[in-house]
Amino acid sequence: MEPTTRGRVRVETTAKRVRTYADGRPVADTTRALLVWENPHFPTYYFPLDDVETGELKQTGKTKHSPSRGDGALHDVAGRPDAALVYGDDAPLEEIRGHVRFDWDAMDAWFEEDEEVFYHARDPYTRVDILPSSRHIRVEIDGVTVADSRRARILFETGLRPRYYLPKTDVRLDLLTRSDTATFCPYKGRAEYWSVGEGKDLVWSYPTPLPESQKIAGLVSFYNEKLDIYVDGVLEER
Image 1 (cartoon, rainbow, N blue to C red):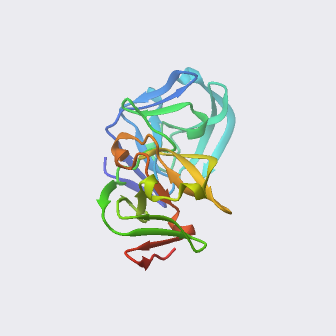
Image 2: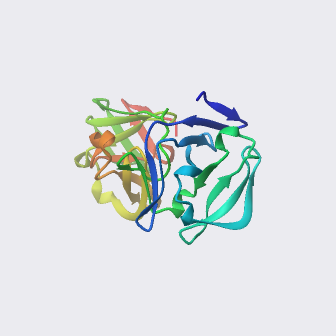
Image 3: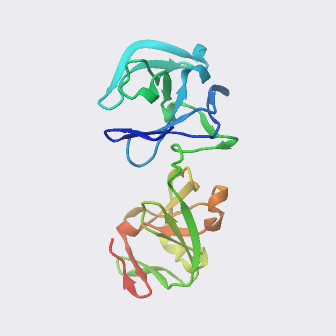
């Protein structure tokens, strides 16, 4: 299928098998999923109704309106309120007619083939490159050098600025305070965080990243936009 757009929405097919689970059971399982870009940053999975366990869906009588996608009928999923939208034959986007969109956070797990996907659907146009670099990276917070390294690995991710991942032995760990914050990335995995002084969650690391991001395992990165990073002696713009 050729990509279709309507307003800010883009629709494409994917050849991957996609599943979503609730209470340990697959609620939807398809090799005919759609990727629908409801916002410009990442897509959402839409499942053909024929590939959904309709016994898990309970219509609520409510609808949710989108200027580009029209009205979707809200359904409870396995007792989870308003967790699915079902688009009928009147949807402005022909491709999504007869498809179901599940609320990501309402479901227990998502899989592409047999690999679990976290946080949101993967964008086929996002690429992550992790390259070793001998550039001199120095990180400064409030005039104090927190990290100094010539052993960085630079992570280049489509649409984002480069991130510098440094060995912990090149970081002033005594200045870091562990945070309770954790985030998930569909390309890198689960991140843990540290604060520095009054700066909350300025530092993060992926202790056990996903396979495609193994090169940054255990390394530490800093929030470029909130502190000073010097690359070969030149201060980066925040």
